Amino acid sequence: MVATKSPAIGPDDGHGRPDISISTLDDFQLPAETVDETKAAWNIFICSAESPAKLGQEMYNLIFEAAPGILHLFTSARNVQAERLTTAIGSAVMSMSEPKNIQTMVETLGFQHISFEITMDQVTVFRDRIIDKIAIDLGDELTQQAREGFFALLSYIGAGIIYVRSNYSERLRILSESWNLANAKGKAETGKEPAIAISQSQDKKTLEENGLTKGEEQKDEDDGETNGNGMGAMSLPTTFGEMFQINAAVMGLAQRDWMKEVLESFDTIVRHVTNSGRMQEESEVLALKIATHREESINLAEFKSCMLAALRSLLPKHWTSAHEVAWTWLWE
Image (cartoon, rainbow, N blue to C red; front, side, top):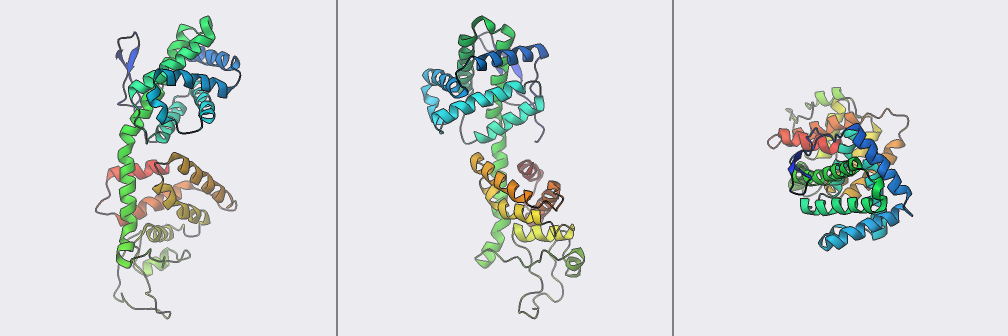
């Protein structure tokens, strides 16, 4: 993940509780004693419940009673959503002593909710009703430190989700626009997706003999001549797939069969980057495909290198540091 800063605890919000800034997202940190008290309270809370799903349903009922207008944010079946809520909060609580894990979890939640415009008022209702439910069930067993721990954690999660939507939407725009540009040239010139003319078995020497190195297209003096099959000796790359294969060959990675699996799935992954469910599904299927290549040494950084090199070559006039950050973020 790209390094970021965290929601800072600000001045009192007028209700005896600190306000939460949504302008940053950094590591989540609380005193060890507060973390321990919060974990202990959550364990008691869970053990006293009939089931995680029922507990989640009861929390949702309190939330919807306080703010019926946020019902549209929850599109899954209520029982499924309820169990997910309990599981997500439990995972967050148990990771309170692991700041990086919490940050990654919040970024993931933010990514999953990026299509929803969530406000801090909604986060406040959500947070306070959950704490109310914990307080009702635990009574005197909920210590002040545990209450403060739940407050800080739920505020961090809510503010982080808002932060991700606000700051990562620009990355998503860059990904979408640059991907369309990277694949539009071939369609515009031929009216269809160009065929890949470079064989996966071509090595660096062959490419250099044809005047192509590191993704740079160069026409030689015999440009336009055809081989015995009536085809051009070398087709200039006009799409991501073509340029990727050239760069893979130049880097000596053309024989990586697992990379072909990623390349075949990459367009679908990029085009559904805002659909977390589809992204997860595609990633899991891809992981299973890669796992079949047991005889190969899988180094994901190799694909990343070829991917970035191909995109830089295809978009020389558009590529900026923001593009580098966005595509690196997507891959990581």
